[in-house]
View 1 (cartoon, rainbow, N blue to C red):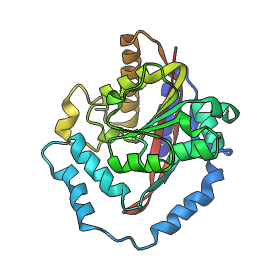
View 2 (view 1 turned 30 degrees about the horizontal axis):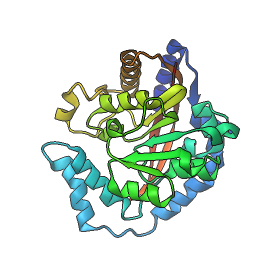
View 3 (view 1 turned 90 degrees about the vertical axis):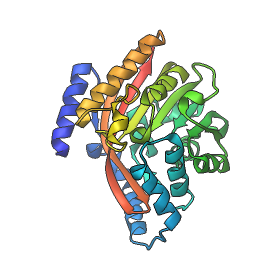
View 4 (view 1 turned 135 degrees about the horizontal axis):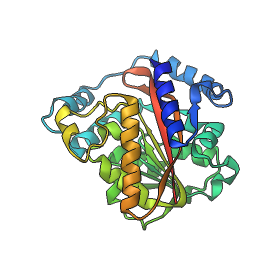
Length: 286
């Protein structure tokens, strides 16, 4: 299954004139954080206390008649405040950052970076601690108030709310990351539009997500705001690329697909250790 998915994405990248990266087979990326992955696995064997309140809030997402940002935010708040959540991916390795974004790590301290859906804030911490990006140039946004507290405590600029609500001037950031939350985004088109608007000309937009997108209720997937209605990862990849390129034209700019990458996201949460596919779509703004 993984091989077939990789083959389809490789073909799509070739059709689009963009390179394809199989991050699982990049010898200068994947092995570097193998020990961190093993640490995640060791933690997953430890006993986790399950809070009844957490269980109830998380059930609301699947049992409520309508998915709203408020319901999703409460679920994330409950998740993050237990201190039982962390993730690891190729972006959190210096060479992985370079391969995915196209930016040299030596030039990273000059970048202004926005992580939309910053969550437990691993990416901004990495940018500051490992790449030397000054804290004043690092911004994290999330609909979770607990996530915003984490970002502030880490010493970075924090914003509460959806991407389209962020009060930044157009073309404010060199790098915008849409961080693995698209399956719980109630208005994907608005999120993509904000990301394109906030990106500087010459800047890089990185989408990371689990595809195909399945998490929201079926009735929520029917609206025009929900772009990822595909039945496979390649269908959703095509839909996302077409939507972002279309949004670029609406904003009188050109959005180009720079590369497609397939890797892993390792997660430690209330369920223990999880390994999921991680799809990266990298765009530049002209």
